[in-house]
Length: 413
Image (tube, rainbow, N blue to C red; front, side):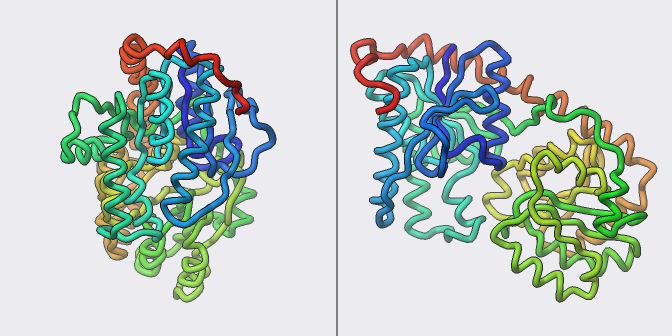
């Protein structure tokens, strides 16, 4: 089985998108499948047109000259389609597997139609809702509705559709998409990357100023929808209940400046620590000094429909998790069993919920074990990747590549 993945960006860049991609491709390789990936115009700089990173072959697409809205995107799609087609003609995959955003699906569909290849389109989030969550779009706007229409069209044209959670599947079914065409490939963790959790890093704790303290924290990107402003607003009330409490924030992003200003103005500013971005290989040290990882996502379409990756990584690290009670979190966390859920957008609710959790330390060890067991059984990529097998096999048998066009151009076209 030969699968050509079509990506917005990939390794060596670090993001939740690239980590999920790496996990999928490495798990597929472990099953004996041959995989390669083509990254799009938005990947950015690269060292070579073709390079192998972490055992995965990547083919790169050069940037195109930007243009006004719509024209610029159409140029990207056309350039990306040419590159995908050139790679496919030489590499001869059995299946094309495009990953969101929808521009990738549009480019891949052109190639699928030209070469007679089956196409799987995998949606990690709806592009229009992600724009709202990132503060670059407005729900109901012309651009929002146009992007939604493109997404629906791409789903209708694809041969099979993967989504990362039930929320996305329900939304597509409500648009009239056949439920039998859609399968769920949930966010998961490559447990091969996680050994035994590191012991408490006393040197790092001293460096951060949290030695002997109770700690909560967040490790990830600072987008508005993550709700970190709500978490900072909860700190005075939480410290009133738990006087030794500290908040550790690891990462960065569009909201960092505003969050730092909010923290500086807080009456408990000395209890809020901004670490900045850290290399991925050092993240486990920060997990070791945080008692509870907190994910206070705000209530909106994006967070109700999409499941995040970070809580699963924390569970794999055998860390306690607490999160807002939105749809994406409810698919990952069982309240009071594998984690704690609190009302979204409510600093007082966060303070009450976390104070109660810290007052119940005797149940922490068992909760950590249950959370890790959940990841091992239901969110382990070595298990999850099997969901693709029957889909790929059925599509490959029905859609072999057109031989008449298979040798017309080279991979470097």
